[in-house]
Structures are given as structure tokens and as C-alpha cells.
Length: 415
Image 1: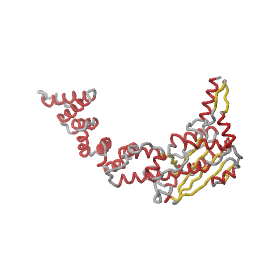
Image 2: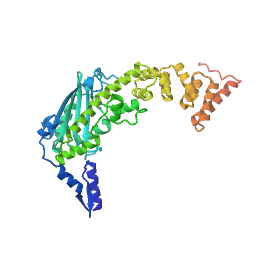
Image 3: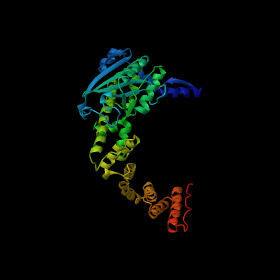
Image 4: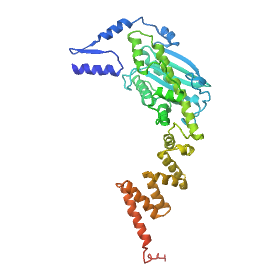
């Protein structure tokens, strides 16, 4: 019996249940505090129309409340100006911002398993100089299928998603819900996860990359008296169990702020990349190496090279070596050599190895090649490649010092 009760307790925890349970003589009973809370807070159940009036929305379907708001790009969060946000040349394949669907969900738990429900979903788009945000609130579990159909219709109108940690959480969870309801779905082909971009740009200066931290640093937006995201499942469960609606407007506002921030962060990231390409930044909070590495992985070598060349004064050793690698790729060895020499004096293995390779294979200066090879061995005695290279160079030097006394056999002429 104890194993059964433990499994039931685990299942309750997976679906986000806040019901406290006591195990007494092998039976699960509702706690006294839970009963008291129910008796004190349980009120009259509101209709969908009354809930819609409370949050400034309207009844979309039975069990679904739709809230629609429009925000000017010039005053996102009343503190960030995105009025010049027209294109996304660096972060997306499609330059038009009107092809983007900004999405976010509120769920009953942090798992993407089948026991987690989506009770609030938001989708926003940019038209002209306005951000149009629609949120769909679930008030009856039976209406979840209609909620998913609504989201699928939104997806069919756009080419790409923008989210914050959506690749790891929101989209996998939505896929699970679609499969649970046996609904065929087609999501947008491209997905911009702004968590990755905030981390890529500022991981060296931010204490963490949570959304409130990113909002404060990038958008200068602080959430004062905002509902913690961890409280969202509790509020929705209180709607169903206790008919308590006092904090529902706070829930809707919190969720709206999450999606408004997506538009601001996308604009901010585009601006940050543009600045790094067109303006020298001697003291920058941007991680130049991480940014350039991304464009290299995307095979956009020209953009990576421009970023590195424009910020030479603020490059660390890794960024300098990446710059030298791009020079070598473009057959500009004369520009790569000074970088390798400088990094080699600081014990940079790859730079010293490149010098040894260059002097052996390109310059044919075996003395210099042997010098850098011995330097490698002194720093990394266990390097078998360096040991092999030293032996090979010694053989080449011996042959150059003591050439063969007899000429090679003359080629036989063909008859």
C-alpha cells in the first residue's frame, strides 16, 4: 500500500497539484489546512462571460477566454523604443518582422510529459508600428482541444517562432498536447529562441539569463509587484477548485509582459549585432567571441570576420585565434602570422602548432619549424603529434645538412 500511495503522490506532483496530502494508516486524506482554505476561499463560480469581463476579454468558445491588446512599438513596457524595428537580417532567414509569431505558454508544471496542461497561451505579431497580442485562457479542461486548434491556426499564418526557452519547453510541450489529442499539426519551420541569443551576447556579464534579468539589462524594464511565474499554476488551480478569481488579472498581465519582452529582446539583439558590425567598442558587454563563433557555425564567415576586425581592441585569446583562422581561410597568412606569434608567447597551443606547420610546409624553414615544435613539447610533453613532428623535422634537417653523394638513377627513356 505504501508503494501505491507514493506513486499517487508522485503523479499529483507531476500534474502540478498543490493539494497537500497526509498518509495515515495507508490512506491519503486531504490535509486540514486544505479543507480550511477551501471553506474560506471558495466562492461563487463565475461564468466565462464574468471572467472575460474581469480580464478585459471576451468569450471565444465555451471554456476559453480571448484577451486582445495592442501595444505601440515606440513604448514597449513604456520604457523601450522599438519604433525603428523593421527587419531582422541577422537572426532570421526572413527579413520581415511581420513573418514572426511571438509565443509563450503558462502550464501546470515544468515537465513536458503528458500530465502537464497548457492553460494559457499567447501569440503576438507585429503589424506596422504595433504589437498585436492575443492570449487564450482555459477555464475548462475539456476546451483544451479548441485551444490547440486556435494555436495551430496562428502558426499557419506565420513563417517563424520567437520565444524565450521555447525550443526546450514550450514547443515540446505543445507537441505532446497535440499528440495526446490526436491533432495533426504543422509548426513554423524556423524558431528564434531569444534565451540562446541573450546568453550568446551577454553570458560574461549577466548573473543568469532568466527573463527578468534579461529585461532589466537589455530593456531597462523592472517588474515591480509582478506575479512570480511559479505562482501561475496555483492561480489557475484556484480558479477550478476554489472559484477564486482575485489574481487572474495579475496572471494575465504577467503573461502579457513575457510576450511583450520577446519583441523588445529581438529588436535589442538585432541592434547589438548591428553595432558590433559597424562601430568599434573598446569596452563592450557583448561577448564578441561567442557572437562571431555563431556566425562561423552558420558559415557566415564574412559577418564573423567583420565583427572580429571591428573589435580588435577588445578581443580575448580565443577571439584572436578565431580571427587568425578566418584569415587563413581567406589565404591571408601574412595577417594570421602576427596573431599566432603573439598568442604563442602566452602558451597558446593551437597558435604554436600552426606556426610549426607553417614553417615546415609553407616557408620550408625547418629550423623555425623545429623551434616551435620543441616549444610545443616543452609545454605539452604528452603530445604524440608534436613528438612525431620533431622526429620528422630532424630527419629533414639531417638530409639537408648531409645530401646524398650519388645522384638518383636517371629516368629510363621510353623506346
